[in-house]
Amino acid sequence: MWSSEPEVTALVCTDCGRTMSGLDDDIIHFCSGCRSVWSLESGRLVQFPFYTARTPSEQPGAPDLHLPFWLVRISTPGISILVRREHTSSPLEFPRNFDPSAERNLESITTEPEDRLVAVPAFLCERASRIGWRVTRHLTPVSDSDVPARALAGGVVTGGEAESLAGEIALIDMRRRNPGLAWAAALPDARLKGVMAVGFNLLAHGLQLAGIRLVLPYTTMADVRALIDFLDLTVPDG
Ligand SMILES: [Zn+2]
Image 1: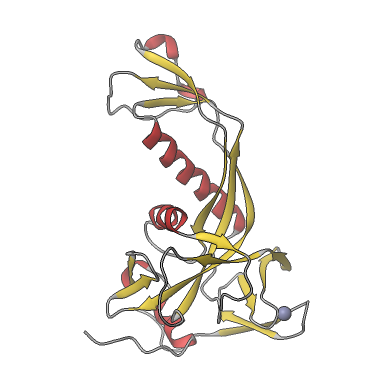
Image 2: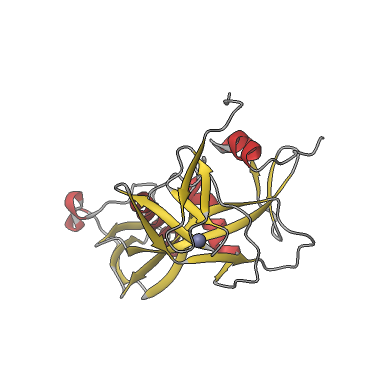
Protein backbone atom coordinates (compact mmCIF):
# COMPACT_ATOMS: atom_id res chain seq x y z
CA MET A 1 0.00 0.00 0.00
CA TRP A 2 1.67 3.22 1.11
CA SER A 3 4.26 4.34 3.62
CA SER A 4 2.91 5.87 6.82
CA GLU A 5 5.40 8.73 7.16
CA PRO A 6 5.70 11.10 4.18
CA GLU A 7 9.18 12.45 3.67
CA VAL A 8 9.37 16.21 3.35
CA THR A 9 11.69 18.25 1.20
CA ALA A 10 12.29 21.86 2.21
CA LEU A 11 13.28 24.39 -0.44
CA VAL A 12 13.46 28.14 0.01
CA CYS A 13 11.54 30.52 -2.27
CA THR A 14 13.97 32.63 -4.30
CA ASP A 15 11.51 35.54 -4.32
CA CYS A 16 10.45 35.94 -0.69
CA GLY A 17 12.70 33.58 1.29
CA ARG A 18 9.92 31.46 2.77
CA THR A 19 10.22 27.73 2.99
CA MET A 20 8.37 25.83 0.30
CA SER A 21 7.33 22.34 1.11
CA GLY A 22 6.20 19.30 -0.75
CA LEU A 23 6.46 15.56 -0.85
CA ASP A 24 9.88 14.01 -1.22
CA ASP A 25 9.63 13.28 -4.95
CA ASP A 26 7.93 16.53 -5.94
CA ILE A 27 9.46 18.57 -8.71
CA ILE A 28 6.78 21.28 -8.48
CA HIS A 29 7.07 23.53 -5.44
CA PHE A 30 4.64 26.22 -4.32
CA CYS A 31 5.34 29.24 -2.10
CA SER A 32 2.16 30.14 -0.22
CA GLY A 33 3.88 33.36 0.92
CA CYS A 34 4.12 35.04 -2.49
CA ARG A 35 2.02 32.56 -4.52
CA SER A 36 4.87 31.65 -6.81
CA VAL A 37 5.32 28.22 -8.32
CA TRP A 38 8.58 26.56 -9.29
CA SER A 39 9.65 23.45 -11.10
CA LEU A 40 12.92 21.68 -10.46
CA GLU A 41 14.50 21.45 -13.91
CA SER A 42 17.93 19.78 -14.09
CA GLY A 43 18.63 20.71 -10.47
CA ARG A 44 17.55 24.35 -10.87
CA LEU A 45 14.32 25.99 -9.73
CA VAL A 46 12.50 27.56 -12.68
CA GLN A 47 9.51 29.82 -12.02
CA PHE A 48 6.23 29.38 -13.90
CA PRO A 49 3.12 31.60 -13.95
CA PHE A 50 0.63 30.50 -11.29
CA TYR A 51 -3.09 30.13 -11.88
CA THR A 52 -6.07 28.95 -9.91
CA ALA A 53 -9.25 27.45 -11.33
CA ARG A 54 -12.50 29.36 -11.44
CA THR A 55 -15.31 26.85 -10.94
CA PRO A 56 -18.62 27.18 -12.82
CA SER A 57 -20.77 27.23 -9.68
CA GLU A 58 -20.31 28.61 -6.21
CA GLN A 59 -19.08 26.10 -3.69
CA PRO A 60 -19.48 26.86 0.04
CA GLY A 61 -16.27 26.75 2.04
CA ALA A 62 -12.67 26.37 0.92
CA PRO A 63 -11.46 23.20 -0.80
CA ASP A 64 -9.75 20.63 1.43
CA LEU A 65 -6.70 20.46 -0.78
CA HIS A 66 -5.31 21.69 -4.05
CA LEU A 67 -3.70 19.51 -6.68
CA PRO A 68 -1.30 20.80 -9.34
CA PHE A 69 -2.12 20.72 -13.05
CA TRP A 70 0.20 21.87 -15.81
CA LEU A 71 -1.40 24.32 -18.22
CA VAL A 72 -0.25 23.71 -21.79
CA ARG A 73 -1.02 25.98 -24.73
CA ILE A 74 -2.13 24.03 -27.80
CA SER A 75 -1.83 25.96 -31.01
CA THR A 76 -1.95 25.28 -34.73
CA PRO A 77 -2.69 27.40 -37.79
CA GLY A 78 -4.68 24.40 -39.15
CA ILE A 79 -3.44 20.88 -39.97
CA SER A 80 -3.98 18.74 -43.09
CA ILE A 81 -5.82 15.54 -42.23
CA LEU A 82 -7.36 12.65 -44.17
CA VAL A 83 -10.70 11.24 -43.03
CA ARG A 84 -12.24 7.91 -44.06
CA ARG A 85 -15.75 8.62 -45.30
CA GLU A 86 -16.82 5.10 -44.45
CA HIS A 87 -16.04 4.64 -40.82
CA THR A 88 -13.80 1.74 -40.00
CA SER A 89 -11.92 0.82 -36.90
CA SER A 90 -8.57 1.12 -38.69
CA PRO A 91 -5.97 2.90 -36.61
CA LEU A 92 -4.90 6.47 -37.12
CA GLU A 93 -1.52 6.77 -38.79
CA PHE A 94 1.06 9.49 -38.96
CA PRO A 95 3.04 10.25 -42.12
CA ARG A 96 5.67 7.54 -42.13
CA ASN A 97 3.45 4.47 -42.64
CA PHE A 98 0.47 5.84 -44.49
CA ASP A 99 -0.11 5.37 -48.22
CA PRO A 100 -3.15 7.45 -49.30
CA SER A 101 -3.18 5.79 -52.75
CA ALA A 102 -3.95 2.44 -51.10
CA GLU A 103 -7.33 3.61 -49.87
CA ARG A 104 -10.43 4.98 -51.55
CA ASN A 105 -12.97 7.33 -50.09
CA LEU A 106 -10.46 9.47 -48.26
CA GLU A 107 -11.48 13.05 -47.72
CA SER A 108 -8.83 15.75 -47.33
CA ILE A 109 -9.61 18.40 -44.73
CA THR A 110 -7.69 21.26 -43.18
CA THR A 111 -8.58 21.57 -39.50
CA GLU A 112 -9.71 24.85 -37.96
CA PRO A 113 -6.93 26.95 -36.46
CA GLU A 114 -6.87 26.61 -32.70
CA ASP A 115 -5.22 28.24 -29.75
CA ARG A 116 -6.31 27.14 -26.29
CA LEU A 117 -5.13 25.94 -22.92
CA VAL A 118 -5.23 22.29 -21.84
CA ALA A 119 -4.92 21.17 -18.21
CA VAL A 120 -2.74 18.11 -17.57
CA PRO A 121 -2.50 16.46 -14.12
CA ALA A 122 0.95 17.14 -12.64
CA PHE A 123 0.34 14.43 -10.01
CA LEU A 124 0.55 10.71 -10.74
CA CYS A 125 -2.80 9.18 -11.56
CA GLU A 126 -4.50 6.72 -13.84
CA ARG A 127 -6.42 7.99 -16.85
CA ALA A 128 -4.53 11.30 -16.70
CA SER A 129 -5.62 12.41 -20.17
CA ARG A 130 -9.30 11.88 -19.34
CA ILE A 131 -9.03 13.80 -16.04
CA GLY A 132 -7.14 16.55 -17.86
CA TRP A 133 -9.77 16.68 -20.58
CA ARG A 134 -12.61 17.05 -18.05
CA VAL A 135 -10.81 19.69 -15.99
CA THR A 136 -10.03 21.59 -19.20
CA ARG A 137 -13.68 21.45 -20.21
CA HIS A 138 -15.15 22.66 -16.92
CA LEU A 139 -12.63 25.03 -15.35
CA THR A 140 -11.24 28.40 -16.34
CA PRO A 141 -7.70 29.35 -15.26
CA VAL A 142 -7.43 32.76 -13.61
CA SER A 143 -4.52 34.61 -12.05
CA ASP A 144 -6.64 35.99 -9.24
CA SER A 145 -4.85 36.44 -5.93
CA ASP A 146 -8.20 36.41 -4.08
CA VAL A 147 -8.67 32.71 -4.78
CA PRO A 148 -7.07 30.90 -1.84
CA ALA A 149 -4.52 28.16 -2.44
CA ARG A 150 -3.20 26.58 0.73
CA ALA A 151 -0.48 24.22 -0.40
CA LEU A 152 0.34 22.37 -3.56
CA ALA A 153 1.91 18.94 -3.23
CA GLY A 154 2.25 15.78 -5.28
CA GLY A 155 3.53 17.44 -8.48
CA VAL A 156 5.95 14.92 -9.99
CA VAL A 157 5.17 15.13 -13.72
CA THR A 158 7.76 17.08 -15.69
CA GLY A 159 6.87 19.89 -18.07
CA GLY A 160 8.07 17.82 -21.02
CA GLU A 161 5.81 14.91 -20.05
CA ALA A 162 2.91 17.35 -19.70
CA GLU A 163 3.51 18.70 -23.22
CA SER A 164 3.35 15.16 -24.65
CA LEU A 165 0.17 14.37 -22.75
CA ALA A 166 -1.42 17.63 -23.89
CA GLY A 167 -0.66 16.58 -27.49
CA GLU A 168 -2.55 13.32 -26.83
CA ILE A 169 -5.51 15.21 -25.38
CA ALA A 170 -5.53 17.43 -28.48
CA LEU A 171 -5.53 14.29 -30.64
CA ILE A 172 -8.50 12.84 -28.70
CA ASP A 173 -10.36 16.08 -29.45
CA MET A 174 -9.36 15.99 -33.13
CA ARG A 175 -10.70 12.43 -33.48
CA ARG A 176 -13.92 13.39 -31.74
CA ARG A 177 -14.46 16.28 -34.13
CA ASN A 178 -13.42 14.26 -37.20
CA PRO A 179 -14.82 10.70 -36.99
CA GLY A 180 -12.89 8.37 -39.29
CA LEU A 181 -9.65 10.33 -38.90
CA ALA A 182 -6.98 8.29 -40.73
CA TRP A 183 -3.94 10.51 -41.03
CA ALA A 184 -2.66 13.81 -39.69
CA ALA A 185 0.24 15.77 -41.14
CA ALA A 186 1.38 16.85 -37.69
CA LEU A 187 0.33 17.14 -34.08
CA PRO A 188 -0.67 20.53 -32.70
CA ASP A 189 2.14 22.50 -31.10
CA ALA A 190 2.15 22.16 -27.28
CA ARG A 191 3.96 24.68 -25.04
CA LEU A 192 3.99 25.03 -21.26
CA LYS A 193 2.07 28.05 -20.02
CA GLY A 194 2.08 27.61 -16.24
CA VAL A 195 0.80 25.65 -13.27
CA MET A 196 -2.81 25.71 -12.07
CA ALA A 197 -3.99 24.84 -8.54
CA VAL A 198 -7.32 22.98 -8.60
CA GLY A 199 -9.28 22.65 -5.36
CA PHE A 200 -10.77 19.31 -4.32
CA ASN A 201 -12.91 18.17 -1.40
CA LEU A 202 -12.48 14.90 0.45
CA LEU A 203 -15.12 12.21 0.19
CA ALA A 204 -15.07 8.81 1.83
CA HIS A 205 -13.90 7.12 -1.36
CA GLY A 206 -12.29 9.85 -3.39
CA LEU A 207 -11.88 13.50 -4.24
CA GLN A 208 -14.77 15.66 -5.45
CA LEU A 209 -13.87 18.55 -7.71
CA ALA A 210 -15.60 21.62 -6.33
CA GLY A 211 -18.57 22.73 -8.37
CA ILE A 212 -18.58 19.90 -10.90
CA ARG A 213 -19.28 16.19 -10.70
CA LEU A 214 -15.84 14.68 -11.10
CA VAL A 215 -15.02 12.13 -8.43
CA LEU A 216 -11.40 11.02 -8.50
CA PRO A 217 -11.11 7.66 -6.68
CA TYR A 218 -8.23 7.50 -4.23
CA THR A 219 -7.08 4.30 -5.91
CA THR A 220 -6.26 6.15 -9.13
CA MET A 221 -3.76 8.42 -7.36
CA ALA A 222 -0.26 7.28 -6.49
CA ASP A 223 0.47 9.72 -3.66
CA VAL A 224 -2.93 10.15 -2.03
CA ARG A 225 -2.04 8.72 1.40
CA ALA A 226 1.15 10.79 1.55
CA LEU A 227 -0.82 13.90 0.50
CA ILE A 228 -3.51 13.38 3.15
CA ASP A 229 -0.89 12.87 5.86
CA PHE A 230 1.20 15.80 4.65
CA LEU A 231 -1.79 18.17 4.70
CA ASP A 232 -3.09 16.65 7.97
CA LEU A 233 -6.53 15.99 6.51
CA THR A 234 -9.26 13.77 7.93
CA VAL A 235 -11.05 11.54 5.46
CA PRO A 236 -14.83 11.37 6.10
CA ASP A 237 -16.30 8.02 7.08
CA GLY A 238 -18.82 6.21 4.98
ZN1 LIG B 1 7.77 33.19 -2.03
